[in-house]
Image (tube, rainbow, N blue to C red):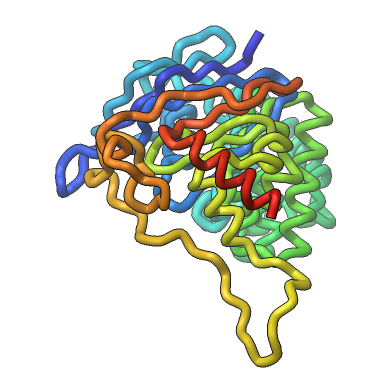
Length: 339
């Protein structure tokens, strides 16, 4: 049985230019122990999808569809009802630790807070558990530093503290939203390894949000590629990486830098780019959100929502794509491989 089932999720936001559909018909499921990656450009709907699971959307947001967590429907729940889940059964590591941590409270108080609220621990017990959590996520001398403030820690240490907060109550689902933003490469890998170890250790389900294809490839079993509030491609990470079926996915992969690429003397290496710019949510076409930026665009792409087509199936489920031009793209890919 799935721990999390999201069905036809739609989120409409109110903007200064009118209503905008930020998430358009997203569906997926996640069982305990499974890991799912969300990838795409800024503004594609990754973070707002995660925020909807936490019940942290703006008051003016209109949400339809279904979000079922352990059999309970979350759409339409009050904030007080969601508070019983947030930090308790659903934990979240936010993108920027300096905004996630309160600068006027010690880290010990912040890590202990969910333990006191959700587990009913007294101050002494919560403090002892907070020290153990900080020690587990790699904060040196945790017992001596528990009364320090966020500004007294490095960026990597602050991110470890937010992980300790998210995991304090042993949640069933962990959402990690760009958990390595602004960290150097060495610290990024340490944080990702820590998250992976803790997820496996506690058999949690995890949703990892990232712009980095390398991060996704190494840390999740399944992935969803999002653009314009829609999932344009989804499947096991291995299947999507080996056979990109959507032109947007192909564009993302082509834009990666390639170490060791050979260039003519004096020639500057240039990365591939996706033509055009990301349209604002209020300007998205009625059909495929990628229409116009895609070299395979035909008139129908602007007007007809592309159906979901299964291109392959493996042990981790279906590899699916939303594209009216899937066959033409597959033919072009076959020619590239043959060449």
